[in-house]
Picture 1: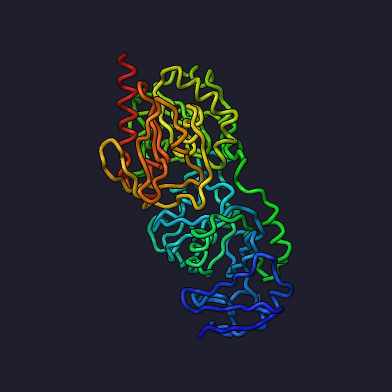
Picture 2: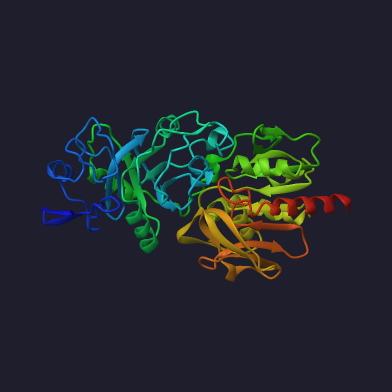
Length: 445
């Protein structure tokens, strides 16, 4: 049965159905919060007074060992997992049912805490082959993870580590047992909040201090995060997509040379380029157009990445414009799509809740075809600002936001979503073939 108590004139309602949540008014956090929880009576076992009925075991402390404190004063408590400590970030939710390891290692999630709406996370463990970050600088990726249920021991032939140990090894703080449905609904209604996620094995938190940190964190707008996740120096990749039973195969006798502008590139974008026969030369985000074109590429890929495209575009967009003017075939993905738009004269805008998941419907406006795609972005091109000669090619069927553009008269196009998926459906792999066709045609001319 739900229980109620009154402490410091604040009423707490504990809900047993789908976990419990505690939401405080935006005027601040109450003093003595932890002692109030420790003295409360819960529906869980006497030695495990958590805020969620799904937690099967107790921790060394009688208090919750994990906390998520939002900038508006909302607090979610549960069991801390992974690394210890505290980290500021923006909270988003991801609706993918599989691929949690790829999600958490995607550099586009830098400075974000990912709340998984699917309740069972961790059951296939983690391995070295499904990591999406492709350079040491991008290794951190997501700062935190939020789960409905405590991850179970792995049961998969590819598992090398349980999720908890893997999170700890990557310095990712996680929290299990909170009401992810309540958090997701809150994000849908109020937008993606700034927050602090904390894990303390002794259950001792200074919630007022965590709240102050969450309020003080500036958020993602205006932040150039590509510089934090890009490679320090150029490197070459010759890999194809993973296939059972052989895993990742090399690219033999490459057909193309593709320069990849690394704003936080995912490994499977490079592998997808390998699948069309491309040898990839990966350059730092700060590389100039002259440096890129010096490799005499058959094509240029503008990669995915984190942060505000307008901030990264300050130095990247002028270089992208020069690349476009060179006539070299170009393809952009995610942040690369947004910055191509900026280079062509459009503007970008922050989205209230963004798009994060592998089940998003997108329509190709030229064919009417609907693709189910993988998405991960909190900014978008404002289609009303697209200049003459730049055509909108794809739109989201969730909210009508822009999902693709092409430059009329030149082999230049981009999409907001992730055609390499990883995780997600393979509906959009054809875009890499389209890129290959553009490069083949350009080479003939």
